[in-house]
Image 1 (cartoon, rainbow, N blue to C red):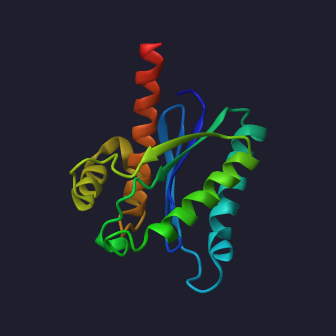
Image 2: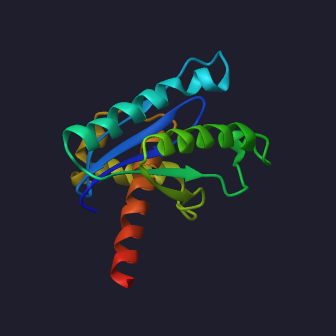
Length: 168
């Protein structure tokens, strides 16, 4: 993928993000909105991130822009409330990202929530910390593995795009 990809692990409490340019991770971090307020108010920092990054990529760098976003598959694990209890809040966060992506005319890669298979988050996080090519990740505190998840979402979308281009 020669363009710009912003990968997101959306949440109303902490959204992990990873930026890829030309298929390489160039920046990553997380956005932690205030815990109080409406869902819309809590997602404002994520909207600001989307507008700034996608706008800069398309207008200043003249790159085609895409967003990869982890979407619910119907299962929400225990840390999200388990048994689907957190699914509605997670769905709201994802929906708000998708609406903003449409407003920005960005191509969207919907990455299923189970993209990671059986690998535990902490194992994936350690693997990214050890990978020299992902040195940009090392400087970021990632307590909930939100940044690691966003990197994984981006890598999944990039790999999927390579596979689809190879098969067409």
